Amino acid sequence: EVQLVESGGGLVQAGGSLRLSCAASGFTFAYYSIGWFRQAPGKEREGVSCISSSDGSTYYADSVKGRFSISSDKAKHTVYLQMNSLKPEDTAVYYCAADPHYGLATTVDDYDYWGQGTQVTVSS
Image (cartoon, helix red, strand yellow):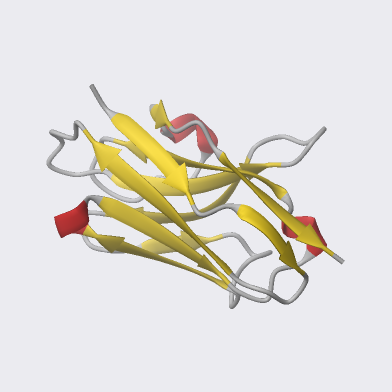
């Protein structure tokens, strides 16, 4: 059974940093993408950043480019999202998700497996 567990969320002041972790277990896929998504109250879930296991390619939403960085540690089966220069508009529940296919998946509909989410709150 595939399980994704997020951690690292919390409350931070604007301009601060957080690092989210997504620990994966039960993976038997040769290729996959891991994505970070977020959902603010009253808004649709949106893609933040994704990484492909096949070639390490990455995707970033325009709103986080230059501030967020995604990385993976395959030995630990963990994907990280380093978030710097946080803004109040980054406040949301952050989810990690997995898509068991070759290539880089970037949209919500591409992903089959989801974690429970971790709250990130950025105060002004």
